[in-house]
Image (cartoon, rainbow, N blue to C red):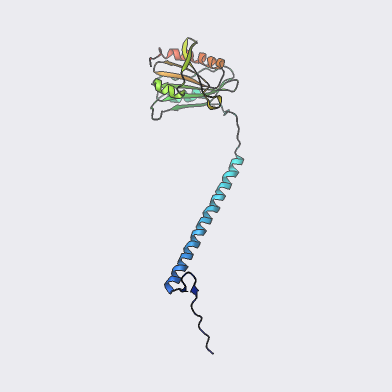
Length: 220
């Protein structure tokens, strides 16, 4: 007895059996969809593995909510930078209990105002950033101080300083709560930070001799 040939399967969507070409197209589409899902699954698994590795590294890295408490030899950095700079860079003789945690020469961005910067921590663990900017103009200085107006002047160590207080809400002040600004030669000197007025006065007095030796104040 011969085996009866099974009739072609009727595809519901077509209402008739598939042609050979339609069967080939369907199998090819299914294969593409499978490979695509496989690729997406692999990407998701790879991303999860990467995130897991990053999470482990974050757990292993020690963190602190306090200020960076490293000590930087800013005098050594200044001596290296000074080789290429005509203007004398300020190198303060810090009072007892003060330390520097940053020192760098900043070449300037689009404003093209180069500057010498020292980050300082006071005996009360507050912050003052000392910036000596070469060729700065009032617009540049205003940008560093969020365009806050000068409130008064002080004379410390024979140098007259403009005093600035950040008028923003306390939570928005960042590292600028109080500032002292003066100029001499072609330099503008900015002391900006969170320290108390007397700590600002101590630093301003310490650097006053170097500022005075740099020449008379420039007119901006």
